[in-house]
Length: 354
Image 1 (cartoon, rainbow, N blue to C red):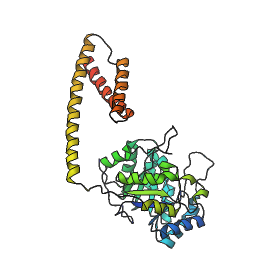
Image 2 (cartoon, rainbow, N blue to C red; image 1 turned 45 degrees about the vertical axis):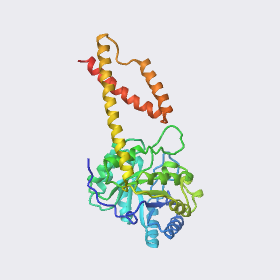
Image 3 (cartoon, helix red, strand yellow; image 1 turned 135 degrees about the vertical axis):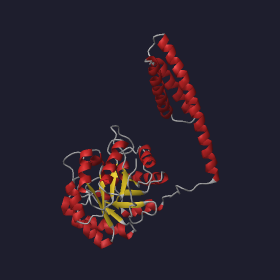
Image 4 (cartoon, helix red, strand yellow; image 1 turned 45 degrees about the horizontal axis):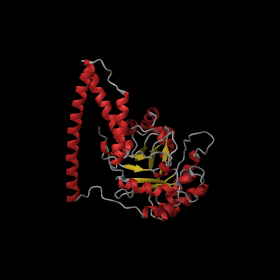
């Protein structure tokens, strides 16, 4: 699976991280201009603001719509910053391009709908504009990749992804659980696709933005999209996750940017050890499966069911406890043995059905 990509060619994206920042919503002309000028004075190059705001429930502020687009134009003319906004319908695309918006992004709720994504893709045919696609609300990597493929299929080659976390029924530390393994797998499959982290929507709290920015950089992400407001406490939407330009400048000044490609002889030797240990793990798993197949044959001969619930529970409890004693998370070890057991059951069922 490949995408036909070109570099984003955005200001600052030759260094990590390139930053897209601005308020959650374009509330008033004064608020847009003040925030943009403050950000420009700190050296930021890309200004974002929500023109249309898809809210979870009705009754909240859903954006000013087309009325706010001239404010974005004015901010661009006054500061020289590029402008970016979210689009969810073909009409949004048409209006954003009409008013000279430089970068478009697709929100999480839209990404989750293939019909909506195809409508956006059709509206973008023949247009040369960078498009960033947020992950869907639910943790579905294939849906995310499918949305990217639809946009790329429309001829958009300056394409990127935004990791904004995933919705969870349970209340946790974060507004949206990061599930870092999903953007990591996206990068593994599409190594040339730029990935931008959105710590504002992951955290839902401004005090968590700094550590999330650092973690995103430690994982090799290319950029950051951070919500920034001239007066965040009085913002009309998502006030708790926005910071001032001064705070954002301070957060970024503390980032440690590590070289993804730098390597030394020491780490090369350690990686060889990992490879050898992985080979040993594969040998042990193969031996375990051979024993499982023998057990499957015994069960067949003695007319026993494949699933022995008491034994399964015993394995999970004991191995989880062993893992904790060895410095690993009990949940992690339990998950591994759940997968091992599933494969064991599959192989035993094959034997029973022969």
